[in-house]
Amino acid sequence: MQLIVFLVEVILIFFYLQWEELGQLIEPSNEQYSSYYSTDIIGNDILKFSISMKEKDKLAVLKKSELINEVIKYIPKIDVMSEIFRNGIEDESDFKDNFIEYMESLHFKYLGEEITIEEFQELVKNPRDIHSLD
Image (cartoon, rainbow, N blue to C red):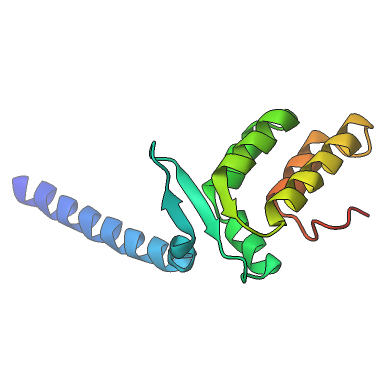
């Protein structure tokens, strides 16, 4: 009986390890984005964008970041969202200001009942073009 229990455990462990390996192959890797992160003095992750980096690349990194998930938690509190965004990105271009303006314009659309809160969250999480909202 003990041998049967042992064999079942070995089989279960084997399948679990195979499942974990398969999961790692399926999950997208964030390694390509790791060079954009630094840590501030109190241990918070900060996105660092160079001035030469293209806006579409900044958006791609932002979409995969924890920062955007943190911002979305506070929708529709635009003041908190903006503060989190300002503190979570180091960028010498106008990307940060443009994205905050984008969020503010979405906020006005939400207040005017042009979009729902779900659409607001989706448009912040997956922005197509932060310069136009049509």
